[in-house]
Amino acid sequence: MLRVPFLAVSLFAAVIESPVTVLDTSAPCSSESAQAVSAVSGTWTAEVQPSRWNTKDRKDDDWSTLRLQLQLRIRDQDWSNWGFSVPVEALSGLPAELTDMDDARFQLKRDAGIVDFDGTFRKGRGIGDFRFSPSADFAAFLKQRGDGAPSEREMFKLAIHDVSRSFIQELEKLGYKDLSLDTLEEMRIHRVSPEFIADLRRLGYDNLPTEQLVQMRIHRVTPEFITELGKLGYDKLSTDQLVQMRIHRATPEFIAEMKKAGFSGMSVDELLQFRIHNVSPEHVAELRALGYKDLDADELVQTRIHRVTPEFVRELEAEGYNDIPMDQLVQMRIHRATPEFVRELKTVGYKGIPVDTLIQMRIHRVDAQFIKDVQADGYKDLTPRELIEFKIHNGRWLARKKQ
Image (tube, rainbow, N blue to C red; front, side, top):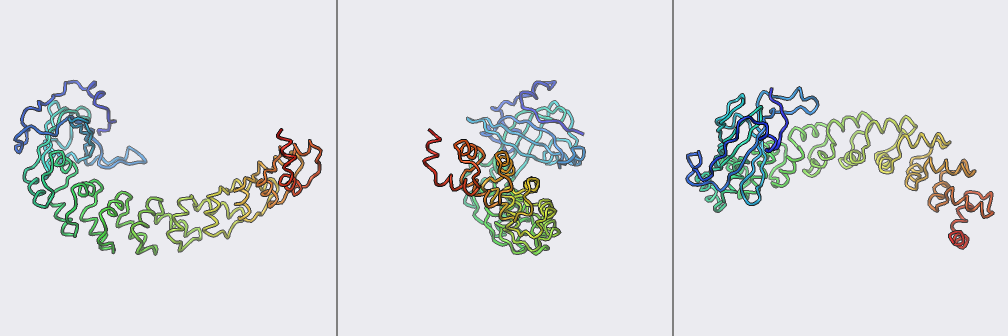
């Protein structure tokens, strides 16, 4: 089965056996509708691809229907590039089982016009020239609906994105009238189809702005996704909530996992916070195994924000700090009262310091080096609280030390 990586035009041209036929752009288009030289023409490259990629194992790619990934480079001042995928069967003139071809001639026929291709295929890759012939009939249709007289470049865009007469008319039946050509193209690019809109309406999402429809498509907010959430009690959500849940992967599967972990009936905001800060069932289970069995949703989020990890808790236990309340653990992380800090203090003779005092020592920068400086100046055997007071109120002594 054909499966080869896409190569740039220059590399591909180096490996093909026969030269590419370059079309004479001064000649008329092969399409019968072409009456003059096309203003939109250029070169193309292509690669045969499966109808569906398998992200886990490429051996399971679906090659039952072939698609052609086309890259078009338009001959204009900027040599702009266009890329899109189309089923091989949608291209008239190409065999279903694409083989090596020295003189490949095929067409992409759309309501807005016809794209004529001429070139060569080798081992699932193609290269050649193309020319676009706009449809006068479709241009008249657009003018009638108030779009003026689209340029040939605009007609080409409509053809590439398959903005058809039926697509426009079906949207109008659904109440989406007077849409700009740019909006129609964007809806086509992101597969906002009349069927998609109708499915959403059946679920209670009616008269949505096109911008919201596009966002829902971009982030895969499908009717199936909405239905599954409804079964779990999350119905009548706003489109913004649905999009945010998709962006942050607050999926029905994640909701079910958290329910098994004892968190049922969570609000959408709580679910999003869990996902944003990576509060997973595994994280909850590890903290529970360390004795933190009754943490609420907000406390769990705080553990992630401030990196109160199971490893952090275990390291503190190894230093003799057991059963510390979660709010104190969070404060220790905020002020960097870490196991490393505890070990540094032990090297200068300070052990078993209460958590609140450790935090105050960090806040006032009473570290091992400060204690060494104080001891070297003759102030020995000060308690942690005295060291803190010394740091706060002995600015003159500190100033001398810095000189």
